[in-house]
Image (tube, rainbow, N blue to C red; front, side, top):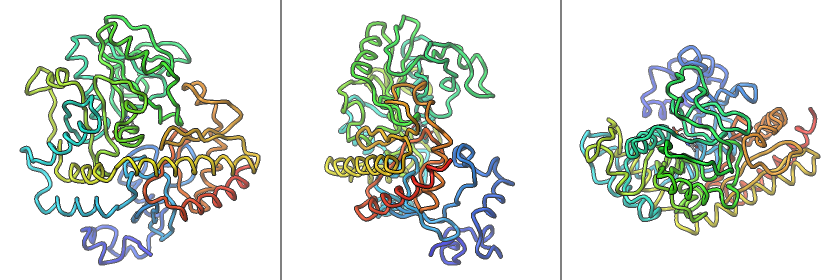
Length: 445
Ligand SMILES: *Cc1c(COP(=O)(O)O)cnc(C)c1O
């Protein structure tokens, strides 16, 4: 059993002054409460606080492969997998080894090391639209840089986004969407000034909007994976490509989730549509903080120092994150995706079976290796209005029943479920029987 007060583990993690001093065996609740007195809401990413499913989060002590262990020593099969970032499974030996080896050479320089070049080359090899790539530290930074770049390149201001797509915590992209209609300039959260979204147009997903020559960029999740998992309808991505070409706007695919998860070439390879710019995050850091913008050479070279669009970052192209990312990409051969797709397909059908046989109306749509959850009587989800007909209370019941059975899903009804290399046959068998029991429990309101 692993818990953070094992003196040997703690000493090496340098935490003797905090948790280890007389803490004994901490409970999830004790640590979460203590965190809440130091960190707003006790979390550093709001969904982790369990607000939308109720209850309190488990506090993770360690993770390995398909499993996470909380500070009370309870082990769960993890279907969160850092929201898709750890595609090889937690603490994969290749990544751990790469991180160790990189760390002893220094953790950040403020001068270019060769590894970032290798990662940019590795991305270009697999995603041909990314003739050049620039690194930063998160998906959020990637989308904000891509938007600035598109605006600077076109000399235009307007950005078109799709209702229910998520591009991180970037002011210009945190705009509220209207129901089924295009809206312009409504802040999606407190703290975003009207001016920051005054040129952001929100339109329904899966419908090609009519653009005009004010539009700098269209940014889209080519497979939407932050409102459940929603496949682009035939013609949608192609239509966006055509409209952008017609008016001279930059087409940005936000592949922070789908990049290197749907396959080596991401959604753009799967659907055969080539964007001008692509944003990456999650998988390309092997579980370490990273983001990237890649794209057409001419547009990319509008970035400073070659062009007028500013970008910089103290830790950008970080030696450890790029080492972990390279280790991950090198292992992600086509046959790995075949296996992951098989796992994702099993996950989707075992959840379908469990809910069907317990009389819980639900479906678990799958696109490649991505699986979503929808609870309720509604049909296939094509946009945000469809997505929000999901029964969030039913998801919360199933979520807690699964957690109780030792399977951790994301604490929110609109998140995807993730399998990684750690989810082998025996893990999937356990998930199946947990789901059978959990669905029976969740059937009682
Ligand atoms: C996760 C995500 C982001 C934000 O990435 P962070 O690394 O969390 O900032 C952006 N776009 C999409 C599609 C995402 O799924």
